[in-house]
Length: 100
Image 1 (spheres, rainbow, N blue to C red):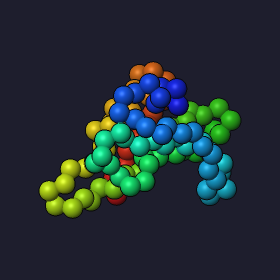
Image 2: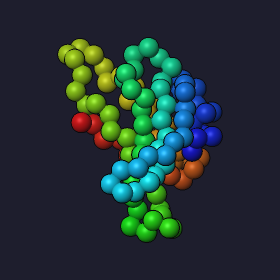
Image 3: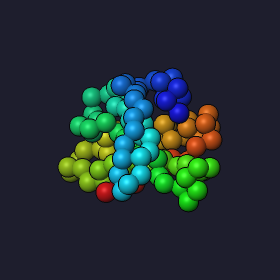
Image 4: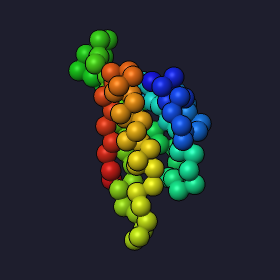
């Protein structure tokens, strides 16, 4: 997934990391769009804990801000949607985007 992320135009600072939450250590991938209109924090996809941790299947989830100031577009959502499509096509990985 990181390799696919690195090949996408308009992506900067792609990174693979490890996080621990709710007693589960899991991978995450994050990046920032190259365009100026973007979230302050990197867009981050965390692995969701599968029913069978040893055999998966894994899926990834990003939570992005859903509320924006009046007249402002939802910043990097078009980039994030492209990332999700590429991961599905190149890696066979399911990724979800949730807006809060």
